[in-house]
Length: 195
Image (cartoon, rainbow, N blue to C red; front, side, top):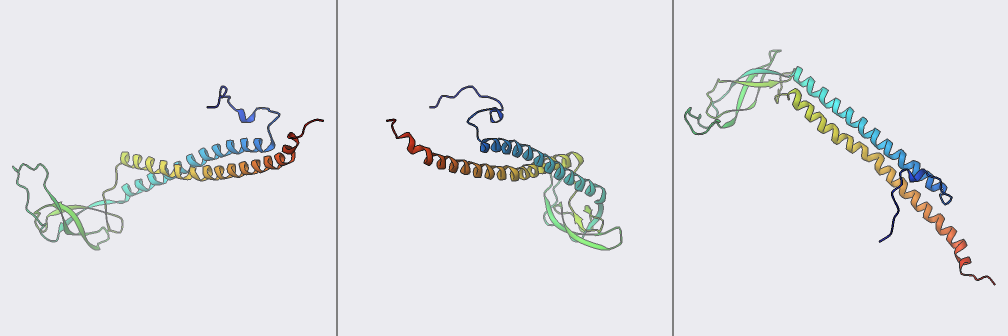
């Protein structure tokens, strides 16, 4: 186990007669990489988060519920009021609706089992009348935007971090090559005796 002294802050920038140019370059590379990593991660995360939240807000404004009518009787049997099941089983059934521009549409919807043909059901549509899912609420959009923005920021931050790691590896190999060259020049002199 090697003995180490107390940890010294900013040791890479302290004066030292043994410090080489490569050591100073590496110190600035480390600082630059960390600053760039934080900057890129925050910028990308914020941008992605805002984009997701804006897209979800646009969906809340543009998507509208319409009343659709079941085209056929839903499969299954309707749950009776005094059944021990508190929530009726839902099944897929075909429904038809008319969009705001008057065009006819149809699609599969989840409806209570045993619903009669012609029963009204709610369908969410986009401005063209196509079936969409129910838009998320503002709190749900905020959480989703934060999660997606966080993942986007982390992924973007990996780019400068990996590039900086590769650059430090290259600097390390160069420094080792310089040490080898110097050792091959001065190493043999250590074996000589003064005579």
